[in-house]
Length: 448
Image (cartoon, rainbow, N blue to C red; front, side):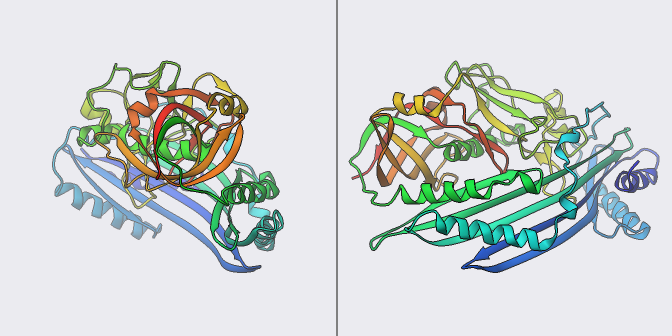
């Protein structure tokens, strides 16, 4: 038993007769370095250690947390959780999960990150900025170049018998390049990530950022038309982030989902599935169990176009009389669990992106969208978002486009997917979403 799991087990050992107690312990060490104009703009290193405690008595639940992991601090947190439970409202969802066997995922922890000196991390951020500037003469500045890493451990223990722990490493670097002419400025993002420092490809991230910025220079506002639309992987991932919030049982139970009462219906093109897989090692959110200790798994939310169900934690599952899908998620040790996807991605017959461009001839390649969350109605699924991109001509990217609006509904978009690329990559911004190049048969592109 590790020190962290021992810490959680100690809290559970103090449970009184008739009450359920759960302790969620976290220990993480995080580093972030941002370079700007050839210098270090910011450098931070933090270490977090704390325990969140849930107490359940007679269907009432209370929560408290502490970063003071001495016996006094832990006992105080338990006492506070008891007091909060006494004030709570009984709910069928106020239960703790039963223990279940989980399969460890040793591959998500790569040793050695703790030995990388701070000056190498600083050098990585500075090199990313330098390499991005050197990519093209029109890259006149870099908005930010950031290196980050995290070593985290999680342990959960409860009076129901849960006793689980894992460790994970995460490393990433991203850069926002600015391409300028006398008349305009365009921005492009480049990203690289992995489990170990040496897995980062700074040159590839710099090149990606420069290409995405420079190819938008000279963009013009087009006339309104209905055309095929090809989504860049980053855009596809952004739409999955919006879809995710509507596919949790929590959203359905609160009346905030456009998919409520649609289980068993076709909500996407027949060849398309939407899968959440917490055991997918390439996904940034991979873990052997969720934030309640329930084993993660592969969950087809939409299968061959048909909505099969929703993502659950223990609370929402108890209310619906089903099993948790292993999607309990916490913002940290100081938060009680909600419901969120782990690694969410589209699945189907995958083809090379060049084939998708050929099939999208005459259409618009959307590279970036803005206002997606604010421009989407979570209940109706209607959206209208700003976009920039490039026309597709001769099976290749051609003239750049700006100030256009792409409008539809989320279900119509899913039903209109005509092809998926074999270029899946995960973007860890606001979740873990696997984006691919995706062709939607036809959408309204509103311009002049």
